[in-house]
Length: 245
Image (cartoon, rainbow, N blue to C red; front, side, top):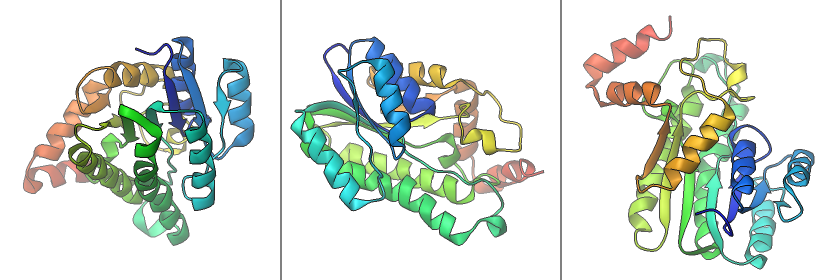
């Protein structure tokens, strides 16, 4: 069901978030669009129609979160909150600026925690909260470094929330593979099984409408990564080491 739903998408200014907004709006949902980029949000909301709302928010800023959540609360109960906001800085551990690393943790992991805290009063009973992990969080990968670590943390957080909120809210985990966005365009290595933002959005919508806890795609990549993460370290680590060559 989508028609008549109100869906808050955090990280909606481009990439997967913008594609989700377009798909859900086309199916009759009202979307609330949040990200730091006000101009992009307003341009997207203008294209989608007057019932859709651009609501700038920085997940790492307490005042910004409070102001945005107050505006969402004034609109009435929300059916779904989908949190996609993330930043990324690929490279070997010695090359990453410590302040940038701290910022990645603040947005990707701590930001997910903040959204999980503010979500329950905004959601209708049984409403859905979806956090975005990544296949990069399944196992430590070369050049993933702090980004992969934050996504592993988001996966763990979503698992905990699923148990804690059971019976009251529908907590889900989204684990994309490589999606052609501004973030992945920074990579200088071959990215297998790349999908477009629209294909990612369709996979997410389909998955969130089913009963499984995790939505992961494309499966030709994610199932291999799940198998790799399930191996004992003596078998898995030599394989991941090869990826750095």
